[in-house]
Amino acid sequence: MAVATDIQKVLEDAAAELYVWALKDIPQDLRDALVSARGRETSVPGLRVLDTIIRNVQVAEEERNLVCQDTGIPVYYCRVGEGFPLHPARIAEALRDGTERATIEHPLRSNTVHTLTRENTGQNVGHRVPILHWEFVPDWDGLDVKCVPKGSGSENMSFLKMCTPAEGVGGIKRFVLESIVGSGGKPCPPGIIGVGIGGSADYAMHLAKEAIARPVGTRNGDPLVAELEGELFDLINETGIGPMGLGGDVTALAVHVEHADTHMTLNPVAVNYQCWAARRATVHISADGVADFDREA
Image 1 (spheres, rainbow, N blue to C red):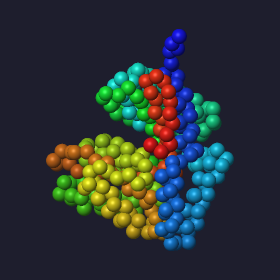
Image 2: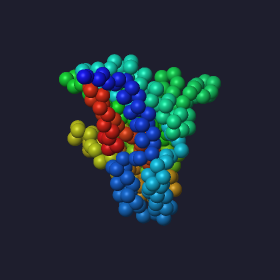
Image 3: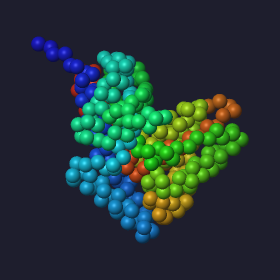
Image 4: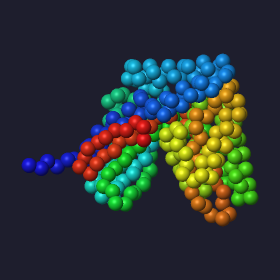
């Protein structure tokens, strides 16, 4: 006897677990990057900060508690196969309901407010919150949902500039460095620097946010863009900002650049900072309703 699976309920349950899991257990690539950063750091304040951060991660794991008190704004990246048997409207509903449940059941701090009145709008949900990004995949019947809770300290250090084409790659580098130096210790470095180049103004910022969700150590598939990632990484770590802005050798754990082709008269550049607690977690859901969690994706 066949039993129908309520895939929307499966997704809602998965989202409720995914949001909390992302807040408690940071990926191994980030843990490794923090240990590597400690090995490169030479300043005493920087070493003390990194020791504290690494211990913080361990305590959160041992006590099954949050890595950071700022539970952020919930952001989900959805890769939807054209054969997945749940409409995107129902996917959005399940993610919202799961986010709300996670906030109540854990419980988590509710951060969402009306932009003008500043009144709380619910359990980390509200108008157009959680924030959803979509990618539709042909010839596939699965669903991947990556949760990237984004804290306000790092999100406040987001920047966009419409550089001129004549400024070229040098203009991109200057703007990124100006943004990082201007941010100082406010976004809780060392972190992941996401850079979006090309497209339009709004899409460049989307690309920068997408870039911070990549695992540390990955490189852009375009060799020219990958080269820019390496150059920016070296330049940013030469600024001396250091862990928590107290001075040191390690300001960035990684620099990730995502790009799109653009108009001949445009050169948009966006920067999105991710703090050291670069939280993310993914769930894969098959067409028959089986959920498989993946912290490392």
